[in-house]
Every structure is written in C-alpha cells, then in structure tokens.
Amino acid sequence: MNHERPLLVFHDVTLGYGGVPVLRHLSFHVCAGEFLGIVGPNGSGKTTILRAILGLIRPLAGRVQATGLPVVGYVPQREHIDSVVPVTAMEVVLMGRAPRLGPFGRPDRHDREAAQRALVQAGVAGLADHLFRDLSGGQQQRVLIARALAAEPDLLVLDEPTNGMDLASEHAIVELVRTLNRDKGLTVILVTHLLPIVLNAATTILLLEGDRHLYGEAEEVLDEGKLRELYQVPVRVAEVGGRRTLVVGGRDD
Amino acid sequence: MTEMFGLEFMRLAAVAGLAAALSLGVLGVYVVLKRVVFVGLALANLATFGAATALVLRLPAEPAALAVTLAGAAVLALVAAPRRLPAEAVVGWTFAAATAGTVLVLASSASADTDAMRLLFGNVLAVTRAEALLLAAVSAVVLAVHVLFARRFVLVVFDPETARAVGIDTTLWTLLLYLTIGAATAAAVHETGALLAFALLVLPAMAALLVAGRLRSAFLAAPALAAAAVLAGLVLSFLLDLPTGPLTVALLAAVVPAAALRAQARPGRRPRLRP
Image 1 (tube, each protein chain N blue to C red):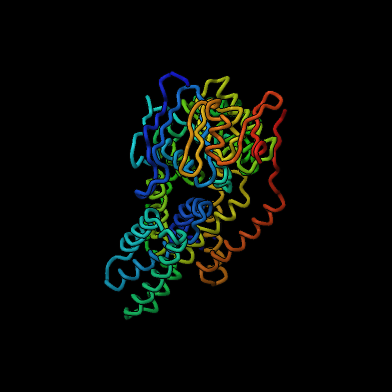
Image 2: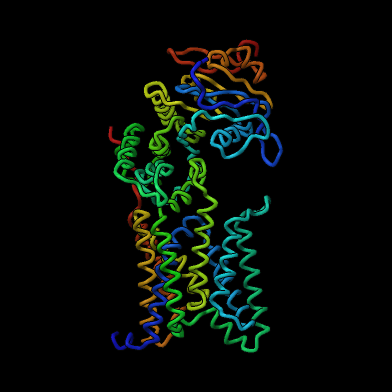
C-alpha cells in the first residue's frame, strides 16, 4: 500500500439519503499518484460514494477527510450532459477553468493556454473548434477528460467513462487515463460497473457487491478466494498476452 | 416609413416592442435549451394574473405583475416537484391555476371584457411613455445580467452536475435565471400581452438555435430575429390594418419552419481526428 500522505480518507463512513443508509462502514483512502477503481453493479452505491468524494453529500456517520483541499477534476457520465447545447470542444474545456475564474467567469490568455494544453493531453487538440454535440462518444469523453484536466487537478474523478462505447473506444479511454496516472502522476478515481475496465490500470480497488465491499491493493483484492467470496461464483484473474483478464466460472462449474 | 414612425404611439410601440424582443430573445435561448418552454407560458400567465388582480383592486398593474411573477419564478426554480411527478407537471399546475385565477378575478370586474382583452392580447400601440421606459429599463437590467454572467449561466445549463461538483452554486444561478425570465416576462406582458411575450421568448430562440452554428451566434440571432419581427409586425399591421401582436406572432411562427428547412439543408458533420 502507498504510504504517502493520503489526499482523501473515508473513515468508517455511512452514506445515504434522507437519513436512510445506502452504504455502511466504508473505509478507504487515496494517496497521491494512486489509481483507485471503484467497481460495483448498478444500485451498489458507486454514485453515492462519488457524490461524497465531490462533497455534494455529507456522511450520515463517519468522516470524509480531504488533505489540503485537493483540486478535483470531475468527468461526469456523458449521458448527464445536455448535448443539444451548441458549444465547441474548446468552450467545454474552458468550463473546466470555472472555479479559477472571477465572478464574471471570463477566461484570460492563461486559461486558454491551460485549455489548449488539456486538449493536447487528451488527444483532441484537432477538435477544439468542433461542436461537442457533433463528436462521437469517444471524442466527447476525451473532451470531458480535457475539461477536467484544464482545472489542473490534484485528483481526477471519472464516473463510468466507458459507458456505451465500442471496444476500441473503451480501450483508448482506459489507456488515456492510465497514461495520465502512470506518466503524469495524476491521482485517479474511476467508477465503473465493469471490473475488467480497471483490471490493468488500478493500483487499488474498492469492490461493492450487495451490502459487502472489498478494498485494498489491486493484487490483494484480485485474489481468487476473495473474489469468489464476494461474488459467490468462481472468479479468477488470468494473464493473457501480459494483460490481466477476468475468468468467471470454470473450475468447479 | 418616416411618416409612420413620426407618430408618437408608433415610436413608443417600437421602443416597448424592441425592449421586450431583445431581453426575451436572449432569455429564450436558455428556455429552449433547458426544455422549460412552458415555464415561459406559466410566468406570462402569472404576470397576467398579477396585473388583473391589481386592476380589480385599483393598484398599479406593473409592480403587481412583477411581484407575482418573481414569486412564481422563485418557486419554480427552487421547489422540487413531488417525487412521483416530473418538474414539468408543477409548471402545468402553475399555468392552469394562474389562467383560472385571471379569469375569475376579471369576472368580478365591471370592465372585465376590456381588461381581459388588454391583459391577454395586449396592445403595444397603447403603450404610454412611462410604460415604455419601464419596460426598457427592466430589459436593460436583464440584458446586463446576462451579458456579464453568460458563462456561468451556460455552464449551469450545459452540465449542472459538474458545475455543482466544482463548487458553483447551481441553485443560485438557476434562481437568477428564472428571476430574470420572470422580470422580463412580467414587464412585457402588460404592454404586449401574454401571447406575444410568450412568442418572443420561445419562437426566435427556436429559429436561432436551428440556424446558428454556435451558441454565441444563437444569442445574437434570437434577439435580432425577435426585434426584426416586432418592427415588421408594427409596419405591416399599420399598412394592413391588422392587430399588431397576433401579426408579429404569426411572422415569428413562420420563421421557425423556414429555419428548420435551412438547418436540414446544412446537416452537421462528424469530425475525424487527424492521426
């Protein structure tokens, strides 16, 4: 486990809405440079954890502690964005600078340069003047990642970034996030309902299943016995061509 | 033309009509993009209800219309619909209640027919100097707010979840958006009538969003179209001896399908990333 000072710590946290708990006794932390994958099926509370990380809800019990108020770059689900609005990719990326702008929200040269750098990092510099709504799902996702990067974040938080994508686009997005984590040292939290998405990228994993959860370093969490106990079916991680892949069922099926 | 606008009532009508066109034209872009078209209709009817109540109580109509509309705008912006209902249902309730209230209030007035005609259909040709100046002042304030804070409003409309996540108070900005829509609508309704105010809010924005390639262009095209329709409506109604408000609405209604045809002739292309 990374022994650096954590950016974000969940201490025995219970989360819920209107006083009704959705998740209980959740403890995990994210250190600088880590890649945390939060994985669980729909309704398992992933979005609730995300909302707590973003400070949009308060825990019913326990404590969420952020060290030094990290700047968070947030990449929402593409489906939550109203693509009828005719804004260009550059205008979308400039929105990432919003917390750093004055009361009128007007970007200056420095903000435009930061947005341009973010577009380059996300591999969509050539799309700056195109309308967001005209882009493919993969291109839109890259623009949203560029918007989060334009905030010059300490922590990049992505909510189901590969939803509705074909295999190639899915792979490209995961590789982009992995590169930002490994090469640029950016701390990442990626929320997904598919374990294979983070299998080759995450350094730590939080698995949610029913009212149980499993948290730890990737190697530790991806243990066959632990996965079997969590999912109640035989699940193991195999290596194919130097990359991890998930095998469900098999040995005692 | 010079002779036409040599008449004071035409000049005042032009000032009032243009003031309403410019502010409602800009606000309409948000109303259409946020899919809250009926908020405009509900607020227009709330303004009518406020003005009708004031007329019956022999109070000044404009402040009453403004107060009732701003209160309604705040409620629509801040109060969440019951869990089992979509937010639009609350807008529908507001529209129905305001319309019924207006009719019932006017029914208790001795001059009900005249008041009802003025309130529902307006008469921009009967605008006084004070009324035109008030409408121009309200529109100027609304436009100033939207020019200064355009980027904040766009972020909150485009992606409210992320706006909240990065610490922007989306409730405050949504409230401000609805209050400016309420103020501009209330100020316009008494002079132009609910029908023209609603049409100026929705139809130019629809046409502008259909033809404009960028949001910035839509924000320029919508008030420009609204203003052109108001002037054309005034001139044509003068020449053809037809009612100004409905003629202006008919012109705006004709512009929308024309814009749709033009947009269909120029479909957007999906760009490819250069290797």
